[in-house]
Length: 309
Image 1: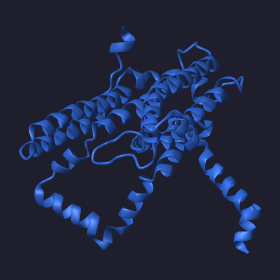
Image 2: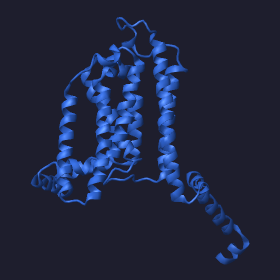
Image 3: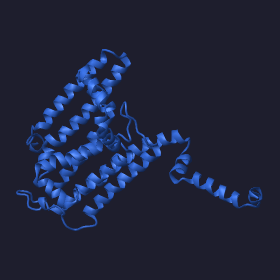
Image 4: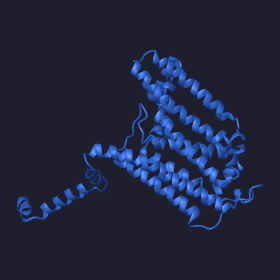
């Protein structure tokens, strides 16, 4: 039981979450004054998802998970999955964007809106927003963060430097996770820009990257990659065995989250394309190939030659 109830920490992340919840509730109250009852209930349901995401984030960085992640690589993998997958999914599903905007006073909200959406001085911010919201940028940055931070030299640097660990590593996991899931989950007023077929490819591609990383840490090597776990005082568990368990967690959890999400997206794709065969045709571009082949055959036919003559 000592593993569960000891070593909780209380750092600025807790203050940030408390302030965020307060501002979100303030925005909900202001929106409630001008909304129908059905919209109020809908926002409240979404708010619980948002708060669940913040709670998962706190559990990852404030609970004994964060403490034991310094001694066990496998626990560190659990922390990374909570920060990059579980928390962003709930935050995106919770759609906190409008309530947080309405937490600002009316004058400040309008001034900021005019500045960011209309002012020429904010053109750089608008360009940056378009870049980070681009589906391909979101997909590539999410997978890049996962791969780069598990390179031994970068991982060991993060273990030695608290700023790199908390702000850069964990921050990049969470931010790219939110950007990635915005391409999959509708988060009012934003909605995914790409088709369900693209989303299936994004999920499968990310799952392949996670599987490859897990295999590289467990099957394709026979040594521990991370020097920060090779000489931890009081830990007798072999570092390579710990690394294999961490890789298994990454591997299994990759399949665990991908399977249900794929089921939802494939159902969405079937509804959009009309049938499963239509989805397969869209993925393989079979219809386009058939159309091109038919056009070429018509061009080469005698009748076509006579028509051109």
